[in-house]
Image (cartoon, rainbow over all chains, first blue to last red; front, side, top):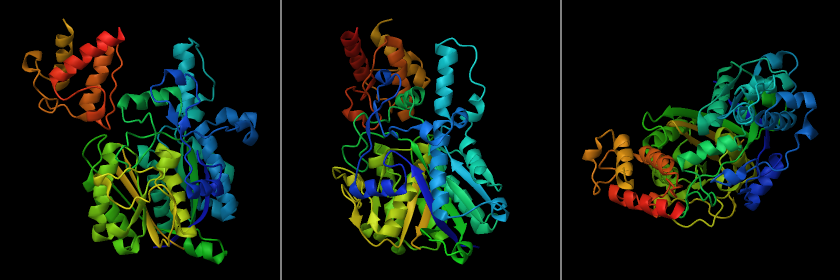
Length: 402
Length: 85
């Protein structure tokens, strides 16, 4: 099996318009959660979120492009442009045939669906824009990435709610590792912060109206965010041969299902998936210094995840740093694992563990080192990034410092 | 039907029981109603009475809506109906 290098990373998310801005925000412990500015917000019960503010689509895309691009695809394209520029790869010729894109999303073009349902149901219109379907389809982001960069290899979308990004990255990893592809663009994109999208989430009554406080005794739910992150995965020797700057090694991946409840998490399923990811990467619990937690800030997730980490890491859990950066950028649902992978890169490459922004009120059910309140300098040799989705779908990535 | 009967009918439907088998001293767990069932019942109550029920599934016990028993729910709904009409 081949080794897999990460040679590019790009993002648009509530904390920043690119990776350097995002890393700066994670170092400083900045919170991007605030009042939602969107149409009909006054009719929402949940009025906070982590939006990508002042996104000017006309500055990046032509009118013709915008007609075809939902917000989630715009985020993906912007993130991919940064990642590809950093990797310094060109995909004309043979490499383009050996490179594809796998992008996770949960809602796809939900904003486009919302706007057009409004037109036909609420406003009584009898026709919608002819590009409504190509805008809203969940594979739109992956397809636009392939067209923008000339990627003619395996390209598709993955949708598994909050685990979409980790599944997408894991599948792309498998393709590079097996030799099916030389390089892959992968990650996630999400833009569900619209009236209809939030109404649906409101109904489940797991959203906080006050803030996202993972692992804190006073946590009262999740806060939704939006954005995208895209990584360039590259076969290790291919990257070395061209002298590429390797950001980190993607060393292992595991996915599994709880086969339990459609919304409640399972400690057993999470533990089993973390163990399998460690084994796939050839890592012992003692080798791992950081876990980027799923850490949604719901009562159920955080308690269950802490129990699962204790079970998977045994005594090593005592020295492990575990943080949830959702406290800063919110829960980007299908894009969240990709943005959280940037937090892992910050830890592996810069030796900075991003915090669980607080104040974190100690909770006996979450008695791990959750890196409360402020970022910390530490040498991180290897880390895990957890995603545990509604539907009982678990996906864990393992990374090693380059 | 009065408020009590309507609330019990909603809970009974969720529990797949006859309303006559649902008593005020029962808890939702006694009736086999899980966390999603609770959220669905509260939605049905909001629709039936045209009220907003303050309830966060993250911390049911600290919500301003007592779901500790069928009787507690009946009284909480009666209070909300009086307040919100």
